[in-house]
Length: 251
Image 1 (cartoon, rainbow, N blue to C red):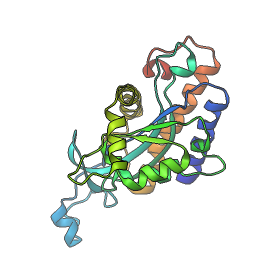
Image 2: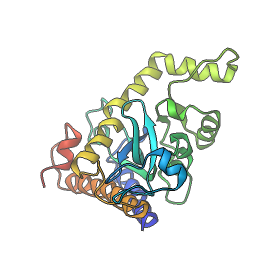
Image 3: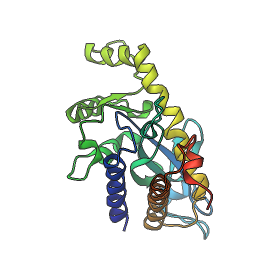
């Protein structure tokens, strides 16, 4: 079921592009931890294979983020369009493009390629995608090379080492440049509030169900429903939205 939902999300993403409702020149990628339903499964018991009490989601795992610390649960990975200063509708609509769900222990950089992989329906096969903005969790040489192969410039905070290569220094210089900072600043007004809004509106944090397959289906359906509602509002010719919350409407 999750595969089918992801395919439908990809179709919706392409529909937003076909109808010229979004600006794809700058896209974003991010993830968020989502708390599992019920009691936590402590690492000491997990290592021993002991489930000390009922109500523990044994599919969930521990993950860490700088904002939430350690959390037992799952992780939503998402790509989205970003906000621009344009006065056109296409410059203001922020929508999910692709999404996936993993346990909380899966590193962000492991999901970059699955979320942007090329296929006949992939939105990232479009030449209009110029930049992908991401947090430090995606700072990996392989991802820069992969993105370049797609014709996309991956922009994220780059760590400088004692023996930093010239190629890596170029990434650092661009990120720190005026244009690099202008592009990267769109992250905090697009994908970050988008993720939190989806979690809040659909009440998926903490999760309402246990088990990876149920969790994955519920979270991905929430993202798909968000896309559908935004598209419906666009087709109703509502005034240009001033916020993501307005796009969802009252329902």
